[in-house]
Image 1 (cartoon, rainbow over the protein chains, first blue to last red):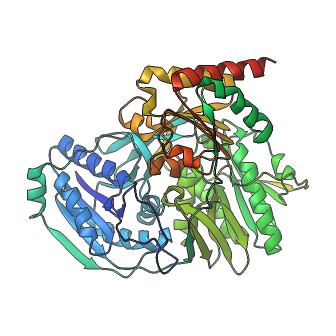
Image 2: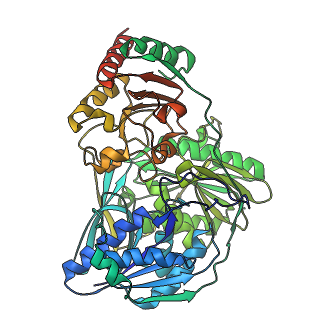
Image 3: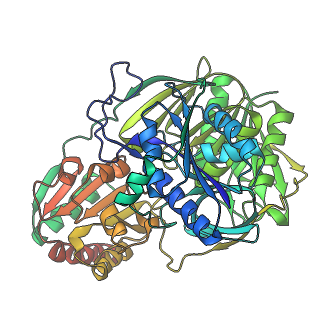
Length: 250
Length: 322
């Protein structure tokens, strides 16, 4: 089983976002970066599938600045075999631009499966994995929360509003991982030591803006200061009155 | 030709409410562009075509087949792409639902065009301009899209459905074939009849303050009393296995914008606040007066949730009964 996992370096979920000096991206001062949480599910699933198959290779692919090597090393420490960094300082909000570069890298690899997180928690695009699948013209199931793969076929569950879609597909395929797919392992010390010696190839790429350009990044409007209505159950009638007569939502 | 194509979404043959919002967005864009709106209905035979005329569509195209009852990605994609190529549409509008988030990228990939996901405002002036929340709503991008066509998906509950009567021409189109390599075989309904947090008008959400999983019964009771209400959860209790991840509100869960969000025993971690800060009205119930949740809440009650929530349920029941 030959599996690729595409990962991204993103600000940690506890990050307090502030616009940077250019007004178009976030200030990275003091920001801790992590492997995108949804990509962690993808890495874990790839490792499980390789273990289940008894043989194979898990290749981690990232696009981004040189700092993404750290992100790839994290996935290697979890147990992936080798890494590829498609190095660029550029960022693009156009999913087709980023996916084209990833698809060009993945196409000759002849992977049985290509896994992504269902989205990156920075740009929230929810798109790159699906676009890569379309560019490679292979089946794709996005946002999967359960997966079974056997004999060149797979069956995946994806959550939709108030239900679960069950999708059957043939390999090769692209899958994007949702929370709930698995419980990602923590890299053990031994894994971290081994990861330092695993191959990590760096290839420069040229990422274009595409058809979308960022005009600005701003903070959402602050909510007006609220008020504490009281303490304990005696405040409940005050709340009911406020919700009915002031906010008119009850 | 040209204009705006709006992809409507159905489930079990009934149109989803978000489709009316998408159609209204399409109408507004078409007015700005001085162009027409075509509504595209994909699904099983017998779909209601009337909605096009309620929200101002100029044309309604119907792609109906028994094979298309469930969302079949490749066939749905081909149905849209064929229409865009035939009609030379400038903008394709979808809803940013589970289906729209899967279908939008497929269309953009095939058309090699721009895709803006989950937008909260859109305007046609010098190209298409949109805003969209990123970092789970901690920041907002203003984006400018050049080139035609482009695909945008609109966030549910972010745009009003605006009544606008029209008399659209209805055209039946041939259904594309499905992809034998990938088939949606079934939609499993959830065990509970409760609404999904992404669709409910009211959400009652619980955190670690509930102390143990069984105590979510208090929130279930409150939700039942309120009606059309979902029960959400913080990341802490989802990670602890108390609640399913589908219920999680926040940066690694769902971003929600209900009319009313009641946070019970949730202190308000930054990643949780990011996922619910666009709710119209926020209520917080917490024993810690200094909890960050009170900074963002419109109304707060400080105290023991085990006393406050049952009283609230009781008061709501009385209200509903009267």
